[in-house]
Length: 299
Image (tube, rainbow, N blue to C red; front, side, top):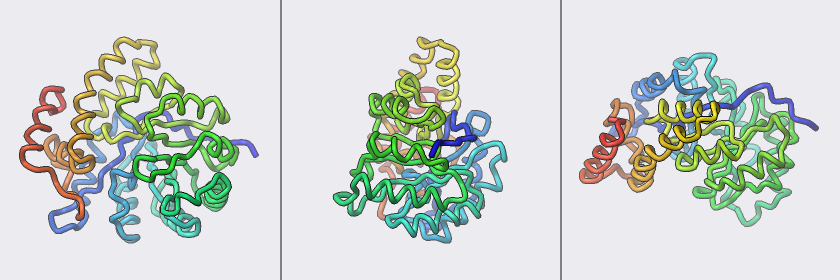
């Protein structure tokens, strides 16, 4: 079976946080505002990735978020939605729901609770079943920092032959792996990096773009970096990458999702609260983050 990928994944995709009110309810107003902020620099958006706190959402909330996003974003922009569950059947069911709600592509993270049993054969069967029954294309998602399970080049190569599996989000930051993935898979199977700190290196290794938390606050800079890379302006592209390093480090230092949401609140009041058991940043952490955003011209 050969791939038949008619969707180009090239570009920048913010992985959107899910904004909450203080009481824990979803703040759809803030979500809409965030979706509209960077539209001219983004090829699409990712909902319910790791930054979307999807593990804290119930089924109704997950579907509602997709419907809201689809109403807001332009039809020319891709809406990529996380639909990975621990079981194959639950992933298939949620995938169909996400498609009905307006998702163009589903992002399927590796099942990992029984990671010791997730052999090559188990993962191959899981993804092949999902891809065969999904109404929309499937994007593989390898995020070992969250799952403790790496989707290897070997299994990805096998999965890339399915005509409904169109690419992978590789979040390990391993540039050598990105290069191997590009080399070992069909030409129209596309690789997206999930590492902002290695974005330029990922492009150089063959990635066609990035699904990045940083794109929520620096989409313009990331888009410019990608354009410069395409034009062969490597030195100018490197300068942008270096300029973004302090922000990337700050977000990692300041509790990930809580830091991202705090930054979005400072920039355009569209981050919202985290959902328990996550905790918001402390006041002194917000002061430090604000200082870094100002120094890098993002605030």
